[in-house]
Image (cartoon, rainbow, N blue to C red; front, top):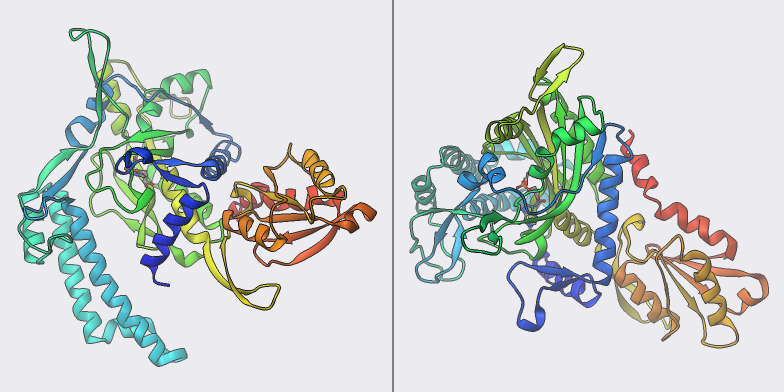
Amino acid sequence: MNQEDLFKKLIAHSKEYGYIFPSSEIYDGLGAVYDYGQNGVELKNNIKKYWWDSMILLNENVVGIDSAIFMHPTIWKASGHVDAFNDPLIDNKDSKKRYRADVLIEEELAKIEGKIDKEIEKARVRFGESFDEKIFRETNPRVLENQQKWNDLHSHFANALNNADLAGLKQIIEDNEIVCPVSGTRNWTEVRQFNLMFSTEMGSTADSSLKIYLRPETAQGIFVNYLNVQKTGRMKIPFGIAQIGKAFRNEIVARQFIFRMREFEQMEMQFFVRPGTELKWFEQWKETRIKWHKALGFGESNYRFHEHEKLAHYANAAVDIEFRFPFGFKEVEGIHSRTDFDLSQHQKFSGKKIQYFDPELNESYVPFVVETSIGVDRMFLQIMSASYFEEEIESSDGKKDTRVVLRLPAPLAPVKLCVMPLIKKEGLPEKAREIIDELKFEFNCQYDEKDSIGKRYRRQDAIGTPFCVTVDHQTMEDNTVTIRYRDSMAQERVAIDQVKSIIGNQVSLRRLFEKLKS
Ligand code: GAP
């Protein structure tokens, strides 16, 4: 199955099995806004717990907060968002469609990369074992030509971005003959800046009302609480403040399902450090964060770091962690060394001293900050796309069958086990209920007695339940059940009182945390 079809199937599956619904669906939806269903909310909560506990429990010097979405509007002036939180947009005059100029160029870069990858894959098949990718890249004329094209385009693009050169971006689009995907024409408008913040009014009368913004990042809620947390928590530098919460951006190009949304959720951590040490901490958090991703077991080669072409107005180093989605490598998390920009700006705009007295140096300074920032929804999409499989299997009557299975990491799966009586009589349902009554305090359990066992297994595979426990006649005699494992489909007979520990070991977040140590 090609990646585009896979992605379409994933979107349909997410809806069919209660993971993600389009927002306001009965009113035909609302662009780039989604609701999480009964299974989606559980997976999302588990992702947040994995992140939160890895920050708060595993680091003595990181604490959490939960700041309000509404904040004083001057915060956004100080942070630079009012003046500089813009995307360069361009319209196609024929289709009337609006695009991000930078995204159009990035897609052109990805197309060239795709051509190179295709050549390499073809050669890999042709040469087999003896294939040496490095030599091939250095010598194949078609690869060299495309690489040169990529380098030229990339360097013009980085220049235009770094100099906020809107005419330069338009020129690149023209020079590379980039066409509108809808009309197929090159009839473009000029490139303009577009501020991404949503605003609203606070207050009841026209005179007293205040224009406020829906936060486009959660980070500023941390910066403006830096002093509160440092003082009340008697925190010593280096220390971090973590937060999970909603953020809002009026994205111009809202595509690819929950990858780019207008209302989304972030998990951000600001780590406050002594000036001059920030690049060391930047490297350290880079390593910590990539390990956190890789611990989920989706394969090392599906991750890569991407250095920024253009540093944000507040950063002196920045890198993205990218994951290989069905539509290519894309950012999931950003790690920024934000210097002392934000705290200094808030010091200036609020008139309050925001400093730290460092007893070792016997001096006060504005701390520098290293930020880790990840989107919950992008993480969700990463997990769903890495977990969705369609497998050919043989059913009990020997026929070929397809099973759709979500191989979710067990600690993140919404439902941990489903208990099923083999038949609906002879005391089996009551026994199954007894097992659930014992386990429901530990795990999210389901009960299912409808249809054949095979069909019930398929339903649980489709939502990613790692364990099914079947109660049969033997259970009534010797208090044993069968556990069926989602991934291997293997079955095992175990005593009922072993079930809690077998499942408990597999679904504990501790299993993931252990992998972060090395
Ligand atoms: N405080 C820094 C910051 O907000 P960012 O790179 O703009 O940096 C951080 O955003 C993360 O938030 C991204 O890596 C992505 O996972 C997520 N994110 C950003 N915009 C998003 C959107 N429109 N929809 C979903 N997730 C988004």
